[in-house]
Image (cartoon, rainbow over all chains, first blue to last red):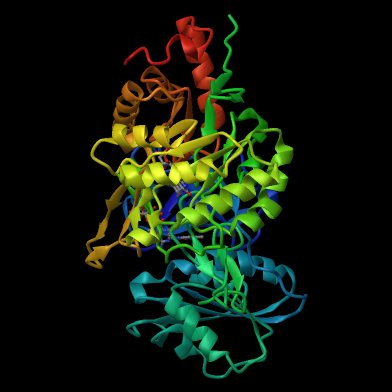
Length: 249
Length: 303
Ligand SMILES: Cc1cc2nc3c(=O)[nH]c(=O)nc-3n(C[C@H](O)[C@H](O)[C@H](O)COP(=O)(O)OP(=O)(O)OC[C@H]3O[C@@H](n4cnc5c(N)ncnc54)[C@H](O)[C@@H]3O)c2cc1C
Ligand SMILES: Cc1cc2nc3c(=O)[nH]c(=O)nc-3n(C[C@H](O)[C@H](O)[C@H](O)COP(=O)(O)O)c2cc1C
Ligand code: FES
């Protein structure tokens, strides 16, 4: 694919817009792409990055990533017109609810991007969307305005420099009658959410991260145990989105 | 000029010398979404054990410079499920099937081999002898000559298919183990399995892999693999299958020049899902350029 635009959103978060040959029509919110870093000679393993937005008409994809190492650093330095090699869309995305449902969307850090495409899809279904976004601090905020187009957004920061102080669960004071929770972010956050809603009738879907080699289901590198711990599922193939009843968080 | 890519590995006739390596291609279904498997010399399936195994805790894969470490821990659904859910499907893809058999006791290996042979779905067995031997406190079968010879002999008695023994590189003189496998009755040898490695996470101040160590594979190990194939070819008169860091047709030819009849491609599948078909094409192009009609003309020429 070809780089259309590379924008820096915060000190270490970048938004990469790509165009060119891709199965845009097939994209489900929550799916990911697997990106070759450079020519792949020193970096044989591709980097999985979620699809933050897919524009079928414009034929473009947007990926939002945080620089944490050599691969994401390479991505952050791409220029307009550069070509990159990626596989996808891969995995299974978020199952969508009935029309007019009342849903809760919770994202933490770079778990936030895939929830943006999800909110686009939810709004097409006329859903009422409450959105909680967790960041480190006020300088770490990104995409908040974009999410506000689709729902009622509450932001949280770990240090309280913006919005609610503390983790996303601190923003859950008056629970509404949500039918479904969609979430992506650090494991402790997903666990806290599951704990918080353990006595409620709510379907929970979480998107997981695991180190990957093949990204297509062939190497069994990225597995997560099922709830009863008697089998495993592949995050890249059966996931990255799972019902929280299905797996062992 | 027309090149003939067909090769024989003992009694096994392959349409070309390129096969995906065990553990790097699942049971074929995933890559069949990218290309039709009947282009391949054969498909080697993931390491299969008697009982289902979940494998090691994650993280169980990580990248290192020009390679990777894996500690999958033989995750697989067990031989009965593999035959039922995977080999039945794979057998319809018009490509020879080689089942990689793993175990932690001689008895387990023999029972899996029996089941594979009885299924009538596979064309050969590849014995993964890099697994820890429980009776010997977890030391791999493939690092001791007597243990290895005994394992191969026992398995051979239950095996009605060609038996390929896959050698471990984690030994001082791999040719000695090759001789032991030959004495045990191996029909062919494949090498190398992964080298044992470790990577440290500086922030966490501990190994990246939950298992601490992992098998090192990929581009970076190729010179070691070529040297080991060379050393084995000099001492053993069995058909050899080379692997370790093969990413291109030229990489594959290096192994042929030190005596390999065929080659396997592992980690390269992860970098490029089309690695195997590309390598097949590159081998044919190289042969054409060099005026070689059959790989036998150059096999072992660098020994
Ligand atoms: C399904 C999925 C979707 C993801 N979506 C996003 C996203 O939208 N935005 C974003 O910023 N990040 C996302 N990540 C995390 C992202 O893959 C890692 O941050 C990235 O691989 C780090 O690569 P690196 O070379 O910069 O880091 P390094 O630490 O140098 O990477 C070394 C190796 O570890 C792997 N690795 C390191 N951290 C992670 C991690 N958290 N998850 C999986 N593999 C890791 C790398 O892929 C690489 O193989 C996602 C991960 C998964 C599994
Ligand atoms: C993720 C992974 C899983 C593997 N699983 C097996 C296995 O189950 N049985 C086996 O004999 N070898 C296994 N191997 C070893 C490979 O088949 C091969 O010997 C090794 O990776 C060297 O080749 P390469 O450098 O082309 O990857 C595995 C390798 C990798 C990377
Ligand atoms: S990364 Fe290979 S199975 Fe998921």
